[in-house]
Length: 73
Image (cartoon, rainbow, N blue to C red; front, side):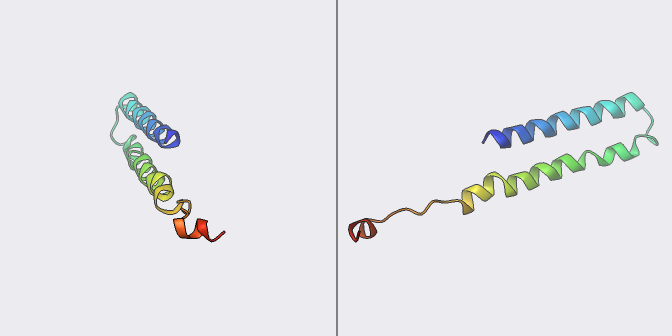
């Protein structure tokens, strides 16, 4: 869970820095490429969610012992 929060925090910081850079440049022609950087961190956090917490929840389940299998030993 802590890795998920770190990823979200990193995306927030990245978005804030890009926004401040666009404000600092204050020229739409020069900051056009920076506007594309708003999409990259959002895509990163979506992929991190799919292959991070969701992946662990769906595929990393430990096998549970049933009463029948524990009595056969």
